[in-house]
Length: 113
Image (cartoon, rainbow, N blue to C red; front, side, top):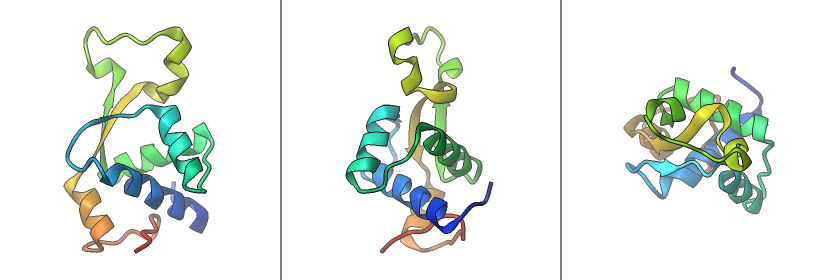
């Protein structure tokens, strides 16, 4: 998936949101990430956020931990929608930090300085 300029901007905003916890795994709190993006005037649908996280993971800007990688991890049925595709945690990688810092570039991720 490459995408439009709007998608590139959205991916950059996701990385910026995660930058605050650089180097630490953070519970995805999927709905919280959606609300944070909305508060930053960048509303995303759950499908868009899921697609952006997959792209960023494929490009190695993020590490993703999925539910099936955590033996014994359980999630209530009421909250299962908050963890699409079993994603429970994400972490910004060194390559993601380099992208944010401008050391590397990706035309499909717009970083606003």
